[in-house]
Length: 170
Image (cartoon, rainbow, N blue to C red):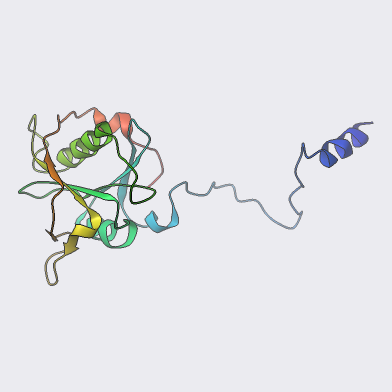
């Protein structure tokens, strides 16, 4: 009877096929981070509105984030007039609206990983990735900005990193 029920369940689509016996299942789950971000040392965050936010952890990671991982229509944020991490807000398509709360959170994350981290507020640039270019011959992570969409002055909340951080093992 148990075998008959199992056969009926399989026919009804309630159970899937068993794994082939010669295939060993990996005990390590695959990384939820998309392949183009693996190997890049980025902090991963999820905004309160559900957008993926990536923040470079080094000059090399900043460079790779900008040149390899980001799409031209993603948003790029960086603390104005000083060193800091590159922050990218991922968009699924060019015309996708990003809520102001997400922009403010990403700007605060950029400020927290910059020379502004000890301040209450600071200016952060918001640009499209396509308007940011690497500078030939300059150090990794150094960029030129062709067009700034606007300058943001977020509230710098140190607890924001903990609240938004995704545990993706990157």
